[in-house]
Amino acid sequence: MAHSVSLANLASVPEAVARPRYDHGRLRAGILHIGVGNFHRAHQAVYLDDLFNEGKDHDWAIVGAGVRQSDTAMRHALERQDWLTTVVELEPGANRARISGSMIDFVPVSENGQAIVARLDDPAIRIVSLTVTEGGYCIDPATGAFNPDHPEIRYDAAHMDMPRGVFGVLLAALKRRRDRALAPFTIMSCDNIPHNGGVTMEAVAGLADLVDPALAAYVREAVAFPNSMVDRITPATTDRERTLLEERLGVADNWPVFCEPFRQWVLEDHFPAGRPALEEVGVTFTPHVAAFELMKLRILNGGHAAIAYPAGLLGIHFVHVAMADPLVRGFLDRLETQEIIPHVPPVPGVDLADYYRLIANRFANPDVGDTIPRLAQDGSNRQPKFILPSTRDRLRAGADVAGLALESALWCRYCAGTTDNGDVVALNDPNAERLTPAALAAKDDPGAFLALRGIFGDIADSQLFRARFATALTSLWRNGTRTTLQLYLSGDLA
Image (tube, rainbow, N blue to C red; front, top):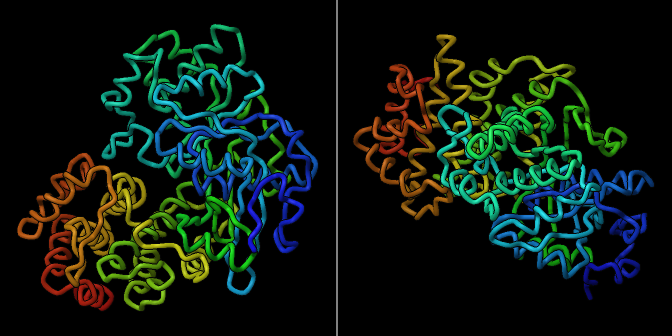
């Protein structure tokens, strides 16, 4: 019989499952986190759980929050188990489970964000952290700059008394703190975006520019936005994971988290309102966050994109199965070593070749059960951040882009909505209504997909890239994915 996760049941949970060594009832809130998903609960929440287990910083517990109605389901699931989460680290022959207790509350989800604004009146909340996805920052994909015409920004600028978006909520809370002469909270992005602290600052201050120039100046001068790099592969939770947890470990959790053993967090030490002593549990504080961040975005996230679309077109569901396919793995290895890594700047204390080998081994972990559909989602937001910067760097250096153009062509072919076998692809992308018609038109006119200037920007002006893209896409439609990958690996695609 499986034991349900709750504070009352902690003593009866099987001994193989680690549990908090601190008194959960004595924790006090110090962080409000917006966007409570699997990654946050496998990453930031676990680091804090480790720190609390050391008997330290019990006034830095997490209060969850969300601005989307989809956050309601997570809140209900966690509320029924006293905000506890079971985290299972998946490693062949050495799976480990723990119950994390670093969250102590979750703000009720509402359409106007007023509950979050009210909670942020509490001066004890000194950090607001975010995992709102790469697409949640109101950025122009082609330029990487804040987009003041984004519908969410425009709405909140006109309704600051009832904001709906995350940046409207943050700005309204900062204004109330300023007006009450309370110190502002630090805003810490934990999303995979280059210079995520600066991007977050531009979003909050850019919204303030539309509302009140004095408030915008206050945001830029008084509020801290540290940059960060975060890393842990964390698949989505399905009934498969819930069943495995019950059958293998005897624990029933409404929304457990399964993840790889590896985790990394690199932070800029810029927290004027204070912070927990995370360096004592493995977090790296350094002024060189940007170097770590670019390395990870290009090599790991870019690598995810590189295997997602060929594997998806071949009907492969799991990432580790894709890594066992010689053509998919060969494409990844060649793309990384020949076109991506040569344009990644040095990172203090890191050998980039060793880092890539670590990444490849992590991708190949069969116990994680990460899926190709998860990696393939949201391409219109991820391609401009993870793949196209490498393409732009090579073009500026006068280097060939055969592999990167093939990756873009694979994404285009995937956006057309069918696999090589004709099975329907469920395109999970906020811009699917624009992507699929453009991808279908590109079958006869490859330039039709590159005309998505909001994604490709000036890359679409490169004759070399256009030629490589057209050759690759034509081959994908004519010869299929396997033959096209074989041609690329043999050097015959061009």
